[in-house]
Image (cartoon, each protein chain N blue to C red):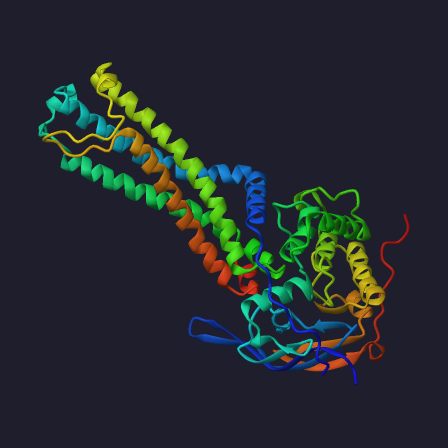
Length: 225
Length: 243
């Protein structure tokens, strides 16, 4: 058998190229991207609203003003009640599951695309990087919108409970009251919400993308959703 | 000595399905010469698509070796396999497998992006290839806006983007009507004769057999027989009629 030129090694693509491809993909699949992003937005909106609401309660308790509702409640003790802790944990779980689910679906329906890209010479790492970028953008945008919606919800609820006093004692910045629990402040909460949303979206999509990229292309392309 | 481009040695492929093992290929030995137009033929489930995947490095054999251009494919690194898929082979599939998020032009440029070809050069090449397959006026349409035949033409242009020496076509006409199928076959045959591209096609379309140099019959994961074009009698009726 004739010895031909040896097969060379595939090159790495410049980062800009991945950025361009992932933006194009998001733009053209705009409708679908919005739905995936909405999943992230809802999760983060719920999380941030529960957290912010909790912060507001703490701040106003600290200022000596409690809502009428809390007064009527038995648990007037200072600090975070067990109920609030539960609510925060629940909202976190809902957020994790919701985001993981929407990212998983979004990647699984693109297994064929991943297989095809590998047929055309894409390296596994390149495929994963594309999904990492796409989900990172989606995660950040979705989480930011979600955090703002959550904040709005918590403010409306706060206004109902405390009236305009809310704005005098609004827990915007982190605070450490003398005998109360540490308060993160709303600004930090929003930032935290964005980071959580982005990280969850990236994990939720890169893990299945990595699994799909590892498969032989024939198998990835066979996968039907 | 003939210039052999693809050689398989006792290729076996098994699929695990729960506790069952399905032996899709049961020891395939074939040699394909450079510039040949070869058709792998067999009923569905015979293993021809599996063999197609082995030759194209789209899947790994359970046992046996595949040599392409004298290289043992199982000795290649991931990067070499990616480069092999990118430069040496062009794939054409039954269901086109175009990326729906990219235009016809975008689909054709993608393998050239992976090959690291600069912007301007790859745009020009994509335009040239799309012109050649007769889609000069639909370059910036998305696959969803094209007919089946047009999509397959985009796939052919894409397969040729990095000047491969082998074109692998898996049932390229199965989803097309007779006339469009004929056009696609003519286009593939034209590449074979004019550019000397080796064409390996899995098919059971008789029109496809008509243009083949050799036909490999696959049955139950084995090569049943290999026939030269002259040995078989195919009557391909005139289709299309007059307008």
